[in-house]
Length: 389
Image 1 (spheres, rainbow, N blue to C red):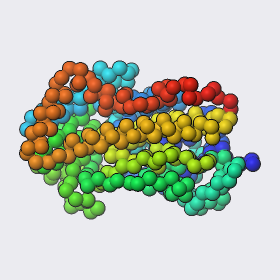
Image 2 (tube, helix red, strand yellow):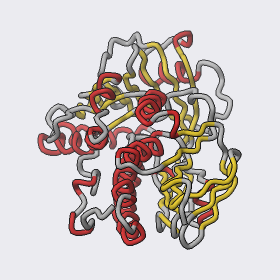
Image 3 (tube, one colour):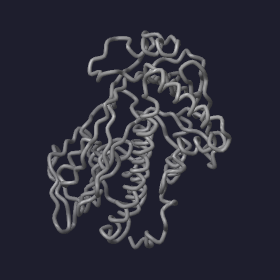
Image 4 (cartoon, rainbow, N blue to C red):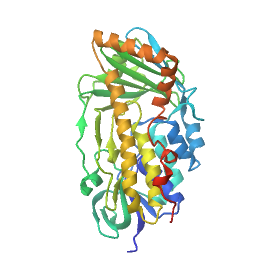
């Protein structure tokens, strides 16, 4: 059947837009359906790792991203009462020896400009997807559309995942966080700082434009946090005074995890947070989704993608499982409370961060250089036959 598009991508976040850009580069007929009409109000994901920058190089966008962001080369780790050490990216085995801090809204804007407005339908809500032997039918507020494949990039509450029957059990952690971006008056510059205390963690990351993100652990979910709570908890736990008047946004989150047993059903495919969910602590999620998009774009450029979808699912599921574990481990370690556990954590982190080889490995670990198959170049080429389309 002659379809309207080769691929319809449901969801216009960073992963969906990156996939669309990669497919457009290969001459595919694509359309991104995004129900939002306005940019997100807060910066959400902010960390872009070296493997993701190499994926962006394929589009000629890495330099533009780097110019727009802040290079984080050092993350200082504080214990209950003293500096424990530093995770540095200055000597990692990559040409990009930093984590790029860039608000998600800027990431989206750059990808949208590169893709072009004509490939994106905003304010378009999808109400159903039905698949047949040779095409998919997408019902949306813009009418009925047909495509050879439909890709769900619509986040961890993915409707596409539900319609495809690919749901996976979601585990919600009994841990809660509140984050806000502030005008930065700390003098920390491009340094990241994390504070692990007996009453809860505080994390602080630089942002471009003279701003800084602060994340605090809270005892309960904060649907409507009292004004100034980020500032108050930061002051109590670190002694650092960040003015409520300098706060520019705020959002709360409760982390979760899941990993679908399979990332596709016939012509319906999952990518990014629709396929897997993990704690955002450590910045693994969006970058894992970027690697999904790179792999999937390669699959969809073969004559018979159905032959390679099991390979995509197997490799990307394994990579996601590794990222989920790392995010969980880092979050668990940072959220232990009480004096005894805090002292044990301080001893462990001081050892890890001040032991030469272990300290070097920490930088590679958090730069996601040791995640399996973190780019397509790391996938065994014998599993990907030469393109025929």
